Length: 181
Image (cartoon, rainbow, N blue to C red; front, side, top):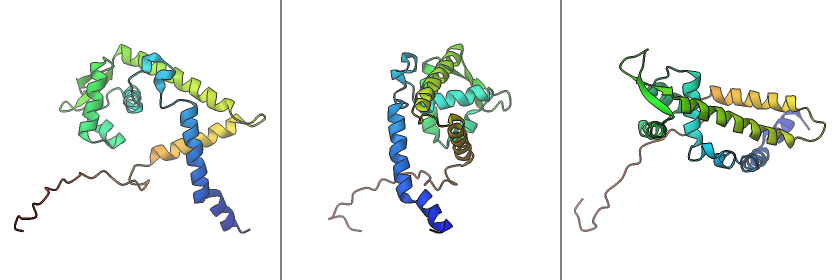
């Protein structure tokens, strides 16, 4: 077996399929898609909602354009997220101190508490995940690999990952067969 064969075996489509199946089992196993199962305080919040909160927490004078560009969201989606968070008294829109023409976001006291609860839940989820490592294995090595993967993915945008950018859907009027062209 050559070095190339080993690389193909290690990263081939069969490995990608196995990883996809394992990833889905992990998502379901730790209930990361059902945050309310871990904490009723998180009921009704999406992962996108919580991601926006985390961004605002990390950079308090964040403007909406930066959120939109970072998450590669259409304006309408970001507006829906912010409206939803504002309605639940988690964030407040503010005039940015850096750019007085732009709106920024500020976490409310409740938003800070909600983010702390999400952190607690994430910690519990990861403890559950680490409990599944084989006896005698080194959890530090596993965590280091996950950190490397996370760092790599965080640095890449949708374009670099080869994801297709969203394009507007064109609606065509159905032509009457009797109508002249």
